[in-house]
Image (cartoon, rainbow, N blue to C red):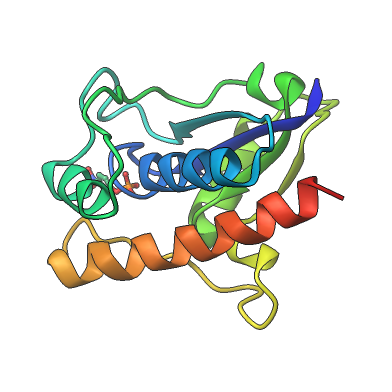
Length: 154
Ligand code: 4NP
């Protein structure tokens, strides 16, 4: 297990958590912090699929290539490899607890708990929304990424 390994988890691993993964990768590179970063879904619905085209477009808007992402489902082993697992919303957090092994090593938290003033809030699920919802979700995960890098740089 590494404290410098971060996993993001949403429902499908095709919208929010791939954007969070990409945003943190950008921020970590920008700040010169070496991190292992990955993402996964609580559901197996989209395993093997690319990120949602709208998420790819939003990432591209921020200069990030999400086209090579492939969705996977979270596993009990993830709780032994990653120091931090961040759920994108409360349902993801609840569903994660059902997957966790008896002795998890990862610290599991809601992603926006990393952002002062946004504790306890969700990154909105843009799946049924439009481009503006993907933009809002990107802004949230990018903001959280800055706080994660600051936290893990200490
Ligand atoms: P994500 O978005 O959890 O951010 O990847 C969703 C992806 C798929 C579905 C819902 C949300 N779905 O219902 O299939």
